[in-house]
Image (tube, rainbow, N blue to C red):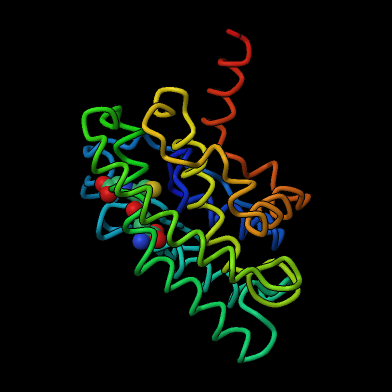
Length: 228
Ligand SMILES: N[C@@H](CCC(=O)N[C@@H](CS)C(=O)NCC(=O)O)C(=O)O
């Protein structure tokens, strides 16, 4: 199975994690995230809105990360990621949809994008507002971590994957040295959101996790470590 993606895309990371947890072999087909690539006629046949991820397998193609995870679940039911009872399945979908419909659409354009694109200092007020909204949502998510330490049920599910792959970029980018002076408040993530921090460590200690870590982030981190 081919995953059309660029490294560092949280949405594509979801598919890598789902495949890794289920033991589905995949090939990451990396592309540069340029309009020429994303909006090319060929790519639009795979992903009608010109967004990654899109997958191709056995003559079938699909876009939208939640739809792809649902497809993978139906195709490879072992190690269920969408629950083992109808009640759990409903809760997992609720968590995923709530996050994608009401939260990630705010995290990305108002907080992550300006930092990644080097606009944060010029748009400081808007970025601070984005951070405020993110903190409100993180506080609710912190409250919602289950007794098992996972979001829903007793093991890792699509709900954990869906949230983790969006929260990790927020922590990574909103704690970059160049934005610390904006006082966005993510350096204290661990003490501010202790349940989410423990959950984050639980995800990171999954044996399948490391191989899915964005190669681009790893390269940047290694370069920075070598330079310091
Ligand atoms: N709802 C989509 C969102 C995908 C998405 O926004 N992907 C971003 C990369 S993280 C993208 O391709 N952006 C390029 C663009 O919008 O032109 C999903 O869940 O797959």
